[in-house]
Length: 312
Image (cartoon, rainbow, N blue to C red; front, side):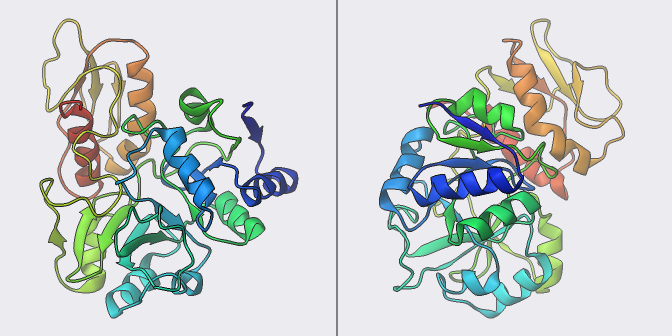
């Protein structure tokens, strides 16, 4: 199929909503990364998402909704959810909560799990699209499964052209990392670090989150050991690159591309996937400077560890 590129204006949003209503797939901008949207109530549309990405069907999807009241139609709410959503929605936070028996969502969205990952995004173009469409959108990252996440419409086209119906081009993503995922089906647990620093969520709750280990059962997106990977091999915590490597730097280092010369983790997060795309185009192995493991650095290091993991 031909993949259309749409602008975030009234005509583009109307066309995108029309495609989604017909069971088609539209990639959309969020503040985190570009997502690949399909009607979360339509089995065929959700199946097309898995097929377009070549995504394992055991890997659940995030459902994006317009507001908290809409989220409550699909999941069972609790006190922790109320605290976190009051503080951080709309924004880069996904909550995993028990799915309601009467949700009406495609069972493919949850990969058979009794829980649902749900988020209210902040990006204005995507919020306008949710309003124009008028329903929940299943939306993983808009890239081939396991590869570098897209932070621009060009990244989406490079990976999925001909496999999806359209891309809504809203410019580069501001945060540049996927959402933080917190599980609230039992004791609150961090399932994936992301665009909301873990420290902020813990401060709002007033207690530390539990941790999900890589060997634990997969219960949320982004937990596969090998993920976010370029075609080239990746080597981490490098101070001296090898002769054949390109260096992704951080701080005051001599390198091919620098995530943040000033050591700003927010800037580094926003640049991470875009710079990995650019270095991967060279065909050379990628070495990466050490990144501090606090704040957004936790999420950056999580993505880099998965990018560097042995490929399946």
